[in-house]
Image (cartoon, rainbow, N blue to C red; front, side, top):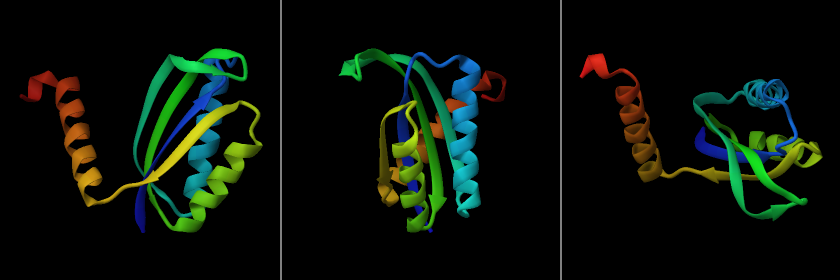
Amino acid sequence: MNQYETVFIMTPVLSEEQMKEAVKRYRNLLVEQGAEIVFEDNWGLKKLAYPIQKKATGFYYLIEFKAEGKAIGVLETAFRRDEKMLRFLTTKLDKHAIAYNEKKHAKKAADANPQNN
């Protein structure tokens, strides 16, 4: 299995609950395809560099996962069919990117738990 990360941007007109439900749907889709979720991060509502579909902001979300290649096609087809989705990008991680992400996740966990330092 290869390791991938997907960042997607959803329309800002969604409520917080609708956004969480959409993320849950994509997470479940990956798990159904045999993927193992490694890391998730909600980046929240951010300003876009340029308007997309006349929207100036969007909900950003990152999912890092291990999966077979066929799972990517299924996930991206679901993204294309969803009218709430503004943009998405899936990247296959090499060993250097995986090591960098692991270091970054460990630092984030350490910053979240300062009593362990």
